[in-house]
Length: 154
Ligand code: SME
Picture (cartoon, rainbow, N blue to C red):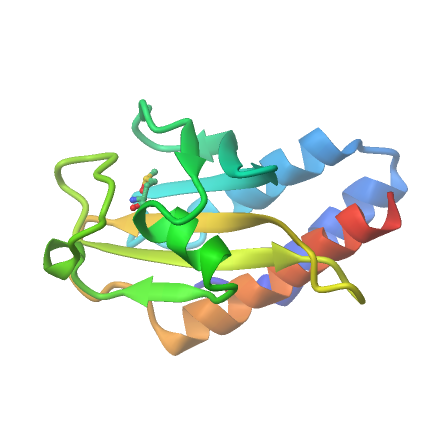
């Protein structure tokens, strides 16, 4: 089960022990991925100007390490400043396929604490249709908000 608070407490502990941002972003991805068999690919993209760049991931390697804002599910989430839960990616026109087996995807934005500035996003793919629940989204938001605080404080 995905428990955002548990992941946040682990991240906070690791941060207190001196872990840098890259290590914390890696831990976040690993912890999320190991929380459920429904999560077949988990990654973090960071926003740099008009492009999202893949920071780290667990799952099949993808050639889509850079995605322009406005493109695909990932770029659309940034362009429209909203989280996106896609129950069936086959229904989308602007979907960018990372893996042929993917059926559903969720993107949760990492935003600054006060400014709301977008720093990046959590991106999860599943080979199952309609894999991501409202609970998943809520728990992912906890993790994304903590990571957003990390960026805000730097
Ligand atoms: N499917 C995403 C691209 C990233 S992969 O899922 C890793 C999209 O449409 O933006």
